[in-house]
Image (tube, rainbow, N blue to C red; front, side, top):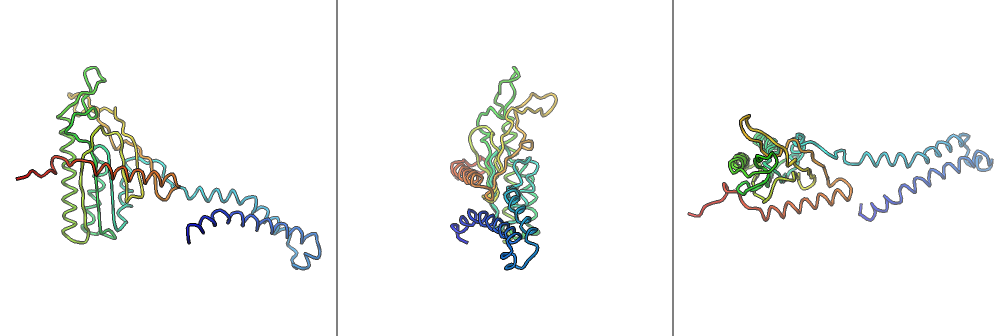
Length: 284
């Protein structure tokens, strides 16, 4: 069906249905009280049918609104702990594209690792996997993550703490890349996983699944943590506590526009992002 026909149907179908119901009501009442009409139709149950059609007319708009509400996306906001379901759903596709921008990506990494590992035994419909992860450049001085200053407020850059996070991300990247290489070597699935760096603090957490579904939330940038009782406090966002708003291409026009905007934004950031030090090849 063409787009023009769909628009015509959406615009005029409700009106036609209402006209039909009202016509049945008018004919039924007329047949009850005007004998020639009743004789012509040869039916003695006109009034009951007419009343039923009137009830249908009155309820039509309500039923229509309820049906429309049932078609709305059921998810508005989810917890980061629920990412596993979105990852599993994404891997039902033949071509899987997962894009992430955030802090270390630990929550997503745990889900991806097990799902990619499972493809070695049973790839299902999946034939191509592309994972791109954008993380902060932990090689640069940062206000978040950082150490809480002696005044209890001021952020103090801590190179050792940044290095700790960088090594964690390096480990995630190496594990995911190793599984991707194994998958590609088997031949049933072509897979690629890569990390890149963006400048600035981890403020946004964004996950995009197959370019169709976007999850976006904001980290609590003033969240504090203590590694050990003898250590100082650190400003350190916790991604698993971040609530995520959900947009889908299957939603309304506003939702589709949000999905398109985030897709373009992450594509652009990826094209500008630098390779992390552990991926840079030093010329001989």
